[in-house]
Each structure stands twice: as structure tokens, then as C-alpha cells.
Length: 267
Image (cartoon, rainbow, N blue to C red):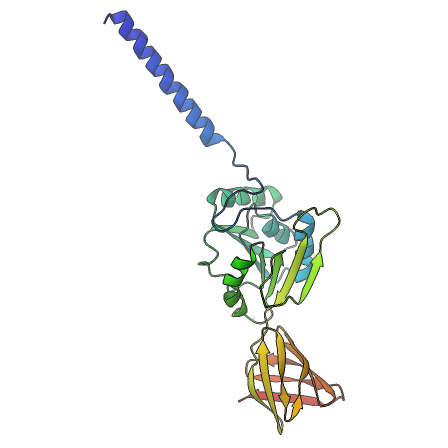
């Protein structure tokens, strides 16, 4: 092979390497752009429409005193919207590219001090300190999370886009504004205090059976109706009187519709 031919081959090889390096660099520098229907670990990603995000936060009555956790936070819009309201918020997202994009979006929105994002599995992440939990997952995934949610502190608000919690009926539900075109419903659950069992209410025996937030039971022989927990707040009717009160661990106290005060202790 002549020196001229060898030189030509080397030049061609160098050109090929240069082109390959350039193509790789372009791929590395290409900005990640999520798309609706993008495959994820447990569910495809579909963004919650902004009008519903706003209504979900209204529904949860978020305040700057709250800590919000969004499970499966996607592009970060729920966390960032909450942060714009002064809420400390954190997103948990499995896709590392989504996490990076969310952090960039938070910086652009000027809320990086309140909006944080972690790359992780929602079933392995500790979010027990949250006051508000938001999610847009399938019902099957909500059911897997349900035991964890029910063990959170009473009064924790859980808001889901579209998909329910099985037999755990929501405390409230809404439909978004007319400009929402798909997945436009949201449901709110308030984690109830656990009150099932025997209580002493003065000289009376109060027995409560609890299924999620709904209560049945008796006050002495009088059956309870319309019994319900809303976080730590309890209401029920028995013996022609309506009782309202607040639960604090193994004690509860409140007033009855006839103006009398009542107290009860567990056991």
C-alpha cells in the first residue's frame, strides 16, 4: 500500500471519529423534553393540567405552615405551584431526567428555596412528615399506598387526581374548570384518627366500630348514627343528641346538641 493511500485511509478514519464524537456531543447536549404518555417505573407520565393543580391545592387548603409531598412529581408543576403559595414542598420522582428538569423549572420560577426534588421510589421513600400528600397514580398504586397513608398523623390531607382509594371513600371531590380536557377530577381524603374500641364517657359506655372515617357503635344501649371522623374531629348521634368533639390520643372531649359538655377516655 502506497504512503498516499495510507494517508487517505487515516484521514477518512479521523473524519469518522470526529463525526461520531460530534453526534455523541449533540445527544448529550440535547435538552430532555418529557411527553404525555412517557413510560415510567409504575405508570406512564401524564401531566396534571394546571387548572386542576390549582384546585387540588385549594381543596387541600394548603398554607405556608404545611409541608407538601407530591408522589410521582413528574415535571414538578404541583410542587412548584405549591411553593409559589409559600408552601414548603417536595417531589418524589423515579426518573432522574424528570428530577433534573424539575429542579431547573423551580430555579426558573424563583422557588428553589421551597421546592425540592428527590430521585426515588415512592414505595420506599419516607414521607411521614407531610401535612399534604398529592398524587396522580393508578388506583392499584393508590391501594398499595393506602396502608401507609392511613398510618400518617390524623388530619393529613391526601389529594388524588382521578384515581380512587377503593373502599376508602373520599371526604370531598371536585371537577376542574371547563378548560380542563382530560383527567379533570380530584378527590380529597383526610386521614382519620383511630378511635375504634371501648371508651368510658362519664358513667356511660361508648363503643365505637370504625371503617376508615365512618363510625358505628353504641352509647350504652343507644345505637350510634351519622358517625364520622374528619382528622381528629368526631361527630355522631345517639339517644336523640348529636355529639361533636376532638380526639387527642386516648382522650376525647366536646359538646352535645343539648349544650352539655362530654369527655371520654379509652378503655
